[in-house]
Length: 541
Ligand SMILES: Cc1ncc(C[n+]2csc(CCOP(=O)(O)OP(=O)(O)O)c2C)c(N)n1
Image (cartoon, rainbow, N blue to C red; front, side, top):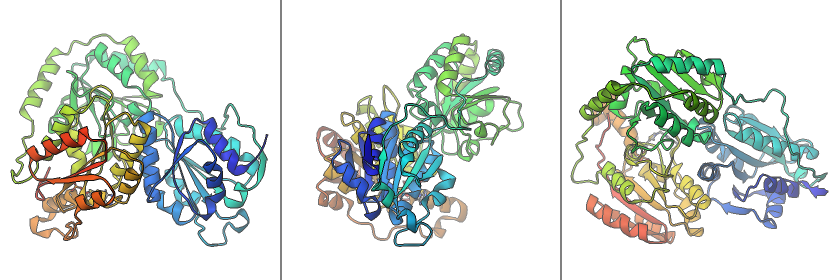
C-alpha cells in the first residue's frame, strides 16, 4: 500500500495501538497534523511542549503503555528537553516525534532549526533523524520496541518536513531485529540459587524495591515473594506504589528523604536484596553502613546500574517480574521473627512527630485525610519539593493506587501535566495533583488543558509563598537570615486564576476547612484547586 509519510506515521501509531498523543504544532509538523486530523487518534493540545512530555509520561504510566508526544522543530523541540530528561531518569517509555526543517536545509541554521537528536542524545534511550522516507515503518516499530523493552526510556524520532510529504510503500514490520540490542530478561539460575542460599541463612534480610518493579509490572510477583518469604520491605521514592503500605511486611521509604526508621533498619540488616532500583545518591545518602559486612543482592535489568554505587555480593541481571517469580518458586518462609520484632521496636521509637505550627495547615495530616477517604484506585501525582515528601510519606498505597512523581531529575512543574495525562488515561479514576506554589507556576497554563478537557482533577496546592525545599536547605546550611532568591514577594491569587480557567477553587487555612473542602471537591465533577496555606518555616531537616 502506498501512503504519504505523514499518513504512514499515523498508521504506525495505530499499529502500536496508540489512541492519544499530546502535542503542540508548528510549521515543521503541519503535514503530520493534517494526517492526525483525519485519524481516530485523539490529540491533546497542551500549553507548553514540556507538559506534552510530562502528560505522555503519566498517560503511559497510568495504563502501562508507551506515551506519545509530538511537537514542531526548533523551539518546540527544545522546549521538550526537560520532559525527555525527566522520563529518561525515571525509565519511563516515551516515543517523541519532532518535526524538523527540510532535509535539504539541515545544518544550515535555517529558521527554527535545532539539532534535537544531538541535543537529546545523552538522555534518550535512542533517537533517529529520518533521512530515508522508506525507513519510517521500521523506525517506528523499532522506536516502540526500544522504548518499552529492557530498561524503558524515551526514544525520539526527528522527521524533516519535506520527508513527511513524500510517498512510500507502507508495510509495517511484525518483528524487530536490532543488532546489539537484546535485553536480558531471564536471570542467571546459578546466581539466583546463590542468592536463595544467602537469603536462607540471613537473620536480618530486607528487600528494597525501586521503580523498576513498577516498570516491569512485577507488583504481583513481589507480593507473592514477600508473602512466601515473609521478608520485610523498604522502597525508594520511585518504588512507592509497587507494594501495599498497609502490609505487615511494609517498613517504609529509605533514603535522604525517607523515613528515619527505614534508614536505621537498613543499616541493621545483614542482607539487602535490591530489586529494580538504581541506588542513586538520594538512596545511599540516607544512611551509612558503618563498615559493617552486609550482603547485597542486586536485581536489575540494566547491568550498568549494578555495582555503580554500592559493592554488590550477588549481581543478577534481568527482568524483575521474571526473577521475582523464580525467587518465589525457590523460597519458603524464613525464620526471622526476632528481626521483625526488632523492626517494630525501631519503628515505634523513631516515628517523627513534626511540630506543625497550628496557624497553618498540617500538610501531612491533609494528605493522610485524602488517603483515608479516596478510592483504592486513585492516582496521586506529586511535584517536587516539600510537597513531594509530604505526599510520599502520607499517601497510602492500597488496592490499585498509583503514585507518580519525578524522582530522578526532580522536575518542578511535573505534577499538573502528569495529573492531566493520568486522568485522560483513566477517566474513571480519581486523580489528585499535589504541588507547591513554585512548581505550579512552572506549568500553570496547563489549567487551560485541564479545563478544556473537562477533567475533574483535584489540585492540592501547598502554598508557603516560598520555594520551600530550597528555603529549608538555606536555613540549614547558612542560617535563617540567609534566605536568598527563594521567596515570592508576589504570588498571584491562585483561586482566582483557577476560576478564570473555569475551575472551582477555594483557599483554606485550617485542616478542618481543608477536609470540608476536599469532600466537596471529591463529590463534584469539575476541576478543583484547593489552596492550602502552609508554614513557610517548616523544615524536614
Ligand atoms: C525545574 C526545577 N528548577 C529548580 C529546582 C530546584 N528545586 C527543588 S525543590 C524547589 C522548591 C520547590 O518549591 P515549591 O514548588 O513551592 O514546593 P515546596 O518545596 O514549597 O513544597 C526547587 C526550586 C527543581 N527541582 N526543578
